[in-house]
Length: 124
Image (cartoon, rainbow, N blue to C red):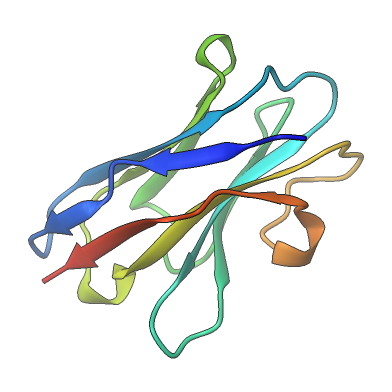
């Protein structure tokens, strides 16, 4: 069982930057996909970005050019660098993992079986 813990959330000014991290409880090996999702009050959870074991990434159109997903296998961490933040980026952000993985990276929440508890990001 994979446990995920997010950190790095907080309040930031419009146009500012913030970096989120997700720590995994164990080494993730083989074929997998990890992603970041977010959910604002009254809204459905949406995929933000995902990365597979080969380093291939996919982003939601709303964050392309502003957000960057990355991983550090040695530290068992997943990161999300967020730049040029907008008020609409305000949400609870979750990291997730899918194992095993035999397809291109996905931002569909139903593909992920392991989830963190979330970290709040507020842009104003």
